Image 1 (cartoon, protein in one colour):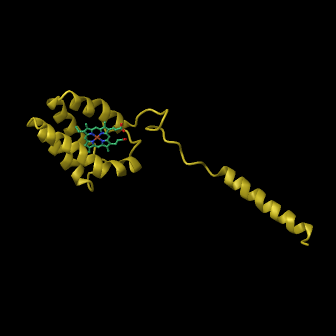
Image 2 (cartoon, protein in one colour; image 1 turned 30 degrees about the horizontal axis):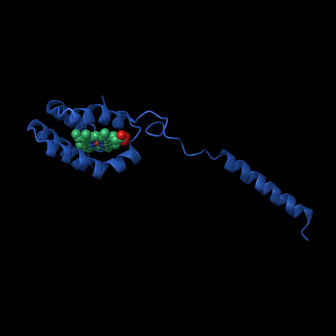
Image 3 (cartoon, protein in one colour; image 1 turned 60 degrees about the vertical axis):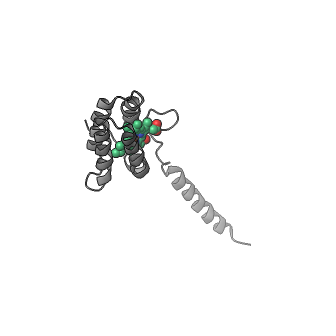
Length: 127
Ligand code: HEC
């Protein structure tokens, strides 16, 4: 049988641990892009600008917006293919090549979207 002091001591440790745990901040809830939250900045831009232009087969708008996407590269020193994909897409749009445009969307989404969404999702777009 342990002394009462033993249990008192342990109780104190649990209390302290409980207080510490209670004060550990929960992971921040996403401010955007989750159910009930507004779309994230680039997500909203993609939907309203690129997807709309693509749906309308508006090649002039696609060229303009894909050129703009290149300027929104969050890691211009590292993500060289971000610019390549966007500018290849802009060129395809200028030349009226729908499949080239769609390939640009698909390539960037496959290569950069996952990392972008981990690191830069809530980032405001450069003006
Ligand atoms: C150079 C990179 C790049 C190119 C090119 C690109 N996108 Fe995106 N797109 C992204 C990234 C990164 C996201 C993720 C943004 C987010 O969810 O916050 C995204 C997300 C989207 C979304 C939002 C999907 C959702 O979650 O609702 C749509 C729609 C979209 N893109 C359409 C297009 C179309 C159409 C094109 C081609 C005409 C295109 N994109 C070209 C990088 C690109």
